[in-house]
View 1 (spheres, rainbow, N blue to C red):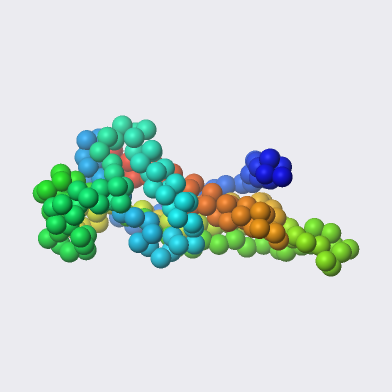
View 2: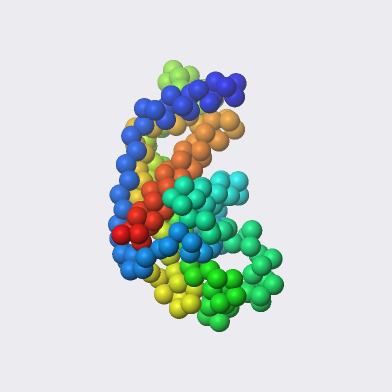
Length: 213
């Protein structure tokens, strides 16, 4: 059954149409060196990300680190993985200006990276798998559109100034989603994660390009 669902998901994904638009709020006005330290703030600090599972949030954080490393950045860390080092120099609240500045002074990390989710939802028309059977156990949603609006912002730890800020909109259309029982419902939420992961990848690559030009 799991193999069949995986094959189904793959075939549906190949037939879907994905588009991404990037809207600049603040164009990057610093040059990011590949040795610069960047600390990724936890996604679960943002209530908007809690529509995704903890595992999916962790995968997104790891994806961000992976993209930076692929682009040659060697000093990028996830906040939770540096909690000991942060607490060791008295940093408990990154919103406190003095503590935030000490992230750079004490740990040599000049930038914080924060992500937040705006819109994340799917829309479409619901249809029964078997229109002739009102007791049909599962449904299909046709003409589906899944939309993710992600904000990617880079902040200086020394000043608290936002130095790069973009909104990234990803739309996946023509993606029928089976729902009804537990396994197909998981597939439904998996498509939401797909939209956010596409936005994340595009957003981080755009940040690196913009701050490197």
